[in-house]
Image (cartoon, rainbow, N blue to C red; front, side, top):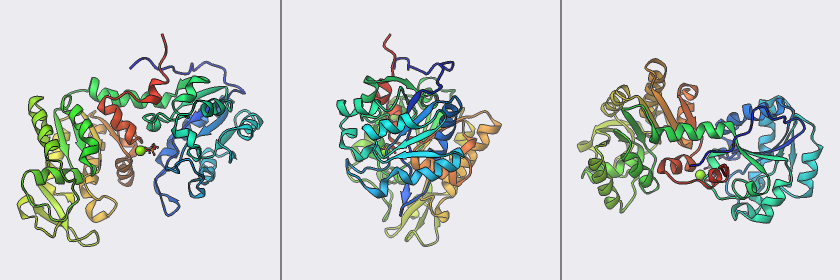
Length: 398
Ligand code: 3PG
Ligand code: MG
C-alpha cells in the first residue's frame, strides 16, 4: 500500500467547504437505531472541522435502497441525533447532489454542518459513475474520507469522487488502517485471534491469510458448529453451512503447515429453542434436537488462558447468541477478559465487525480495547490482504 494523502494539520480551513464521507449506516430494527457507535465515532471529527470554521458537508449512505428513494432509509432520521451530539443545528438537503445541494453547501456559514440525503438513493453511486461523482464533488472545495467501513466499495462517493476534487484520507481512517494492518504486519507475539460469525465461506480467505500470521486461531459462534460437525460430533438443529468439508480440510491442513493452533469449543450451551433455558453439554452429549447457542465454561476457560498468554488479540464475531442474556456469557467473558488484560497486562487488543461491536457495547467495554473498528466487510477485506478501492484512491502519486 502506498502512502495516503493526509490533510496538513496547519492548513487554513476557514470558510472551506469540506465534503466529509462518513459512514452513518447504522443498524436499525423497526425504524429504530439499535447501535449508535458509528454516529458517535464521527462526532469528534466533525467538531474538529467546525472548530476550524470549515463548512462541513456530510455524505453517507444508509442501508441498501438500490438506487431508489426509500423514506424509511432517509438520513433525515439521523439529523436530530447529530444535532444532539454536536449541540448545534444540522442542515439537511433532500437532494444529495446537483444545484440544490451545491447552493446549500455555499449557504451554510463557517462552522456549520450540512447533511446530504442518502447517497444510495441514486443508482450512479454504486456504479461509480464519473459524471455523477463530478457533480457530487461540486458541493465542496476539498474531500475527506473518514468512512473506512465503506472503503471496500468502488462507489462514486468513496472512489470516483477523488478524481474530481482535492482529496484526503481522514485522521481516523488512517488510524483504523494502521491498527488493522499492524495485526498482520508487526504484531507483538504471541498473537491470537477469536473468529466467530455464521458463514465460514465469507471468512475463509481471512482465515487462510491469518493462519500464516497467528499463533492461535480460536473458532467460536455458529462458525464453530461446522468444525464440531467436521470432528464427527452431533450438532442437532444448530446453524451450520453445508458443503464446507473441503474448506475445513484445507484450513486444517494450512494451519499445520504454518504451525498455527486452531482451537474449537470443547463444551457448549444448548437449548431446544431461543426462548428456553440453556444447558451446558460436552460435545459428545449434544443430541439431535439441540441448538448450540453459546460456548461452555471449559471453552471460556481455555480462551481466557490463551488471552492471558497473548500479547496481541484480534476479535471478530461473537461467541454465541449474545443478544439474549441466557446465551451471552461466552461473549461477555471474552470481552471482559480482553478489556482487563488491555488495562493490566498491556495487551494490544483490536476488535471489529458490526455484531462484535454491538456485543462489546452491551458489555460496556467499548473504550477498554486498544482499537475498535466499526467496519465489517472492509475490516475483513483488509485482513485478507486485499486492496480496497476507497483507500487506493487516496494514495499519493509520488
Ligand atoms: C457496512 O455496513 O458494511 C458499510 O456501511 C458498507 O455498507 P454495505 O455493506 O451495504 O456496502
Ligand atoms: Mg457491509
